[in-house]
Amino acid sequence: AQSVAQPEDQVNVAEGNPLTVKCTYSVSGNPYLFWYVQYPNRGLQFLLKYITGDNLVKGSYGFEAEFNKSQTSFHLKKPSALVSDSALYFCAVRDPRRTDKLIFGTGTRLQVFP
Amino acid sequence: ETGVTQTPRHLVMGMTNKKSLKCEQHLGHNAMYWYKQSAKKPLELMFVYSLEERVENNSVPSRFSPECPNSSHLFLHLHTLQPEDSALYLCASSQGRAETQYFGPGTRLLVL
Image 1 (spheres, chains in turn green, purple):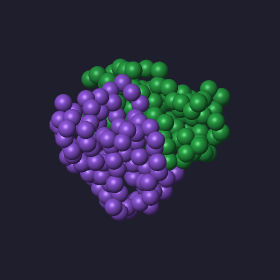
Image 2 (tube, helix red, strand yellow):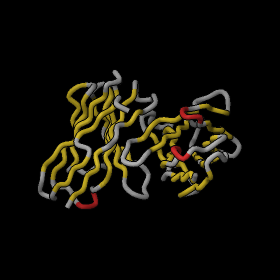
Image 3 (cartoon, one colour):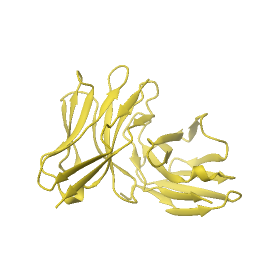
């Protein structure tokens, strides 16, 4: 079955430190992977996606993600966290059987402390 | 942020009420989606419309009824809902069903 796992419910990091939000996936064929962010009382905002090519994908607000095929991971990273990065982050993979369907993880809450 | 708008932002309804959620996208997209977001659960895809044609999703109860009158507007008609239907309902759109989906701010629904 196609699935996405975000093993951490919450990640805490001090402002200015690097951050990593983890995501692993299980999908048949080549994965199409996405990261979205959700601020309080807001919808999901698209951050970045991996379709093919360079394993390091750069996205909005200084975020990047590293695709690792052997570890089936797509971790979200940022070199220096900001308090304003505090939000709920979702990893998603496109269902290869239905290209319009995204399979989401349960989300990871990122808390950046000043 | 204003590419996809949803109204109302908050809705409280009784189990016998009929209400509708509205979504409008200003991005020129041709596919639109309804998702349900419940606490501690992954987002659930409810319905997909592409070029105003509905893609069936058999797992959604019939008390939810979507309508897509044109490529810019999407409605979700609600009737005789249950308390467990309380959730954040998100609309999204994309240029083609295989392209990146962009989300609206959601409607927070409470069923009493």
